[in-house]
Image (cartoon, rainbow, N blue to C red; front, side, top):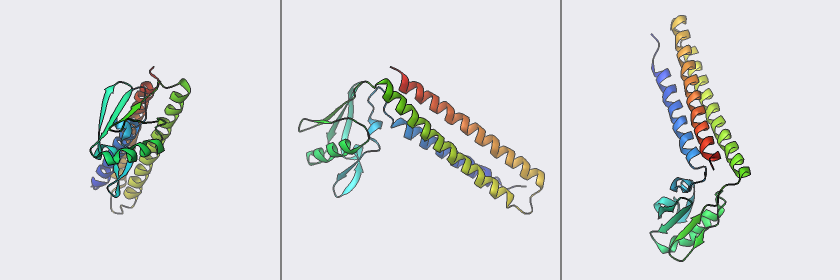
Length: 183
């Protein structure tokens, strides 16, 4: 009997890769403003780097606007600088107590760039999953006393798991593409 932990471990890692891609794709800007867009931006505050949502309240008063209200007004300029340095491509408006981010409508060219970016991220996730499969296959090959037919069966299961996971990534990508290209 082959140890099921190899398959279970591969499945767990593939699931984590899938979840990571979903989180990463959520940070790609579409036509709507959403607080998730600021998740990757860190602010120099209290002597360390912290995510914006730990130093301020992020709100969405309108579909194309985010408001950032710092818990401590001393962090206002640090938040503003962090947003300016980020890859958001938006200039923050600081009124002395709050920062407003107004998202202009995306141009067709920018939408296509974002789709390319999403495809690149998805391809990286697929490569990661293929590496997980390779590691699992190597683990199966190292089993000396396992019957050959059981090893073959386990390898087929891992391949099916990879195929299913890559199909799911494709669905996630097509949904994100649709969301990005939506005008």
